[in-house]
Length: 183
Image (tube, rainbow, N blue to C red; front, side, top):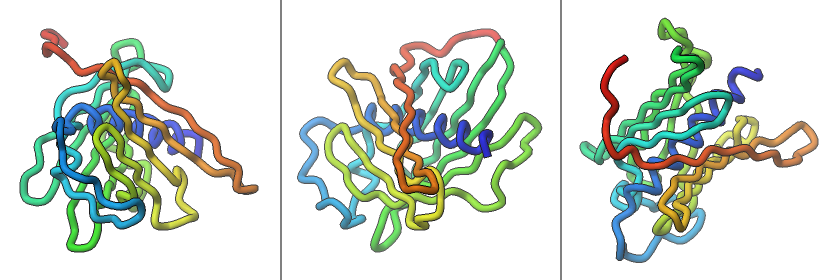
């Protein structure tokens, strides 16, 4: 359970960074909260490479441009020059909603979950996107991506304990300027 929580937290943080970086300036009006009517166009600001520190290591997240009504993302945590966790993420535009789905993997491509974690886009505006689990028993229950005033991507993961109390953790990313060489 701790492993899933850590991995989910990291994925949320990385996705947040990616989402915030890609939003075009001057984008049109955002869909109303809870409408699920957000489109990939509203999430264009997340595209690119993001990096930061958090969740016990160095973190990286990458988002592809939208194509075929989807965006692909990857995430990893590096500890002492070794990858400790991978996430493979997908944002898909469906007829009545936009969904974020992802799974965690250990090195060796060993999955943590049998079924992908799923979140519906509930709110989107320039520099902010809120995804909520449709299954209220799923943890985390919410992932919030936002762009800070200094251009960093903030990803906040919200979990809920058995008493219904909310707990949050997050990661802040900066846009990678240059791809490193080597390893």
